[in-house]
Length: 498
Image (cartoon, rainbow, N blue to C red; front, side, top):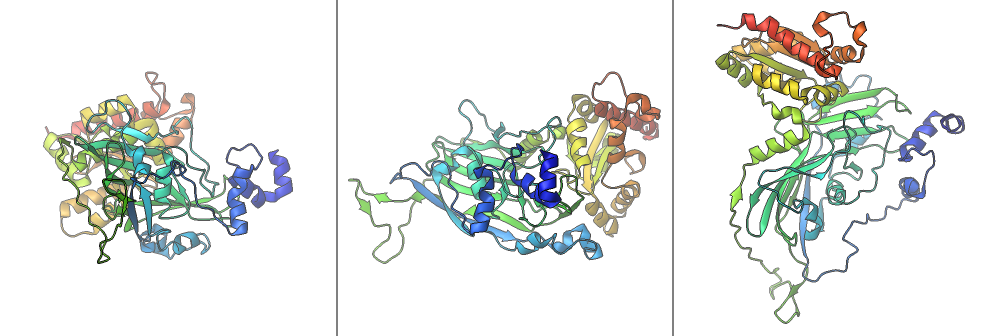
């Protein structure tokens, strides 16, 4: 069928066909053809969301959510350094044209936020749960890059899809790479209310046919919601992309009409991508004690002002601790503490330990752009033997190349400048893992691409004793990384100050 389709449609025709054939059965169903039909007719019917078909409840509460959006800064992209040489203007058209939020404000029923409530049963303060579970792992691979239109959201995906659609009309609630989905935990509990903190991994498709796909992947969406335990009232809501780091978005775009076509990658910074409620939810219709409708405006024309009771929280958890727990749920390898760059070397000096450092071109914390970085953390850094050795024998840190370049160019602290320089000397694209002395000297390092090449080889083909497989581990990735760490210890421990 593939061969027949290629002959009949040509390469670009098959590319478009495959992007619509979401179930890969080589047939375009009416549902799969719907995005193209809407494009051709110029009609885009309003999306139908669960619960909206229920009979209206006069006492139901609604709230208004506003979108605040500042577009990505082109000068933060690495390809801006050479004037985007070799990057076609057409490839970035979707990015350049995205300058405002698709929907500046929208009204939501409070009950639509029910998916943010904890699952039935005993869920304690700070105990994470999955709102949308990740369906991908190292064994399932990743989803196709060759897609333009998101699949229809289902169940708890619906509210998140509707919220993200305020930014752009084509949000993908589930990312192409693990970890997908959304996690949450309780950060405050009262008799009638919860505060729920959440983290969402989602991305956007900025192109449509006949252009090739352009993926825009913010590092994460995070935020909180304060809602009643029966979800009839929402006191507060905020969702945003963190902007405290120098880079917070990955971008990938195809240059051809097939899954194996050349793909460009880049990173950048978006100053603001945020949704926030204008105030608590209020009744859609106001009734008196006899059930009669009351005018929602005073004789003066001013709207009625609602007075909300003060919430008395019985248990509370800090935002920082909640964010850490959600991050560990998404990335189990972060059960090891990864300290800021300079703090890690200060700690190593104090504890007389070696530093395990990961230097990336993209952002590891925010869904690293490189497949090698993803594979590294998913196959290696989350394994129990690696976690145990890292916790016992190393101080760990990870950094972005741009951050160390800024540190190296800074004149504020000569010792920090030296640490950054020693790291950058050993770095090769895309990810470099290093074992260092507390003074910054790199005693051992390995590039992620070389690491993946080694682990994909047969054991009998590996010549170097430094990276030979160990029979004590079934997974060659774990065995090889364990060897890397042990070799770092062998080289570094004798050089530590007694």
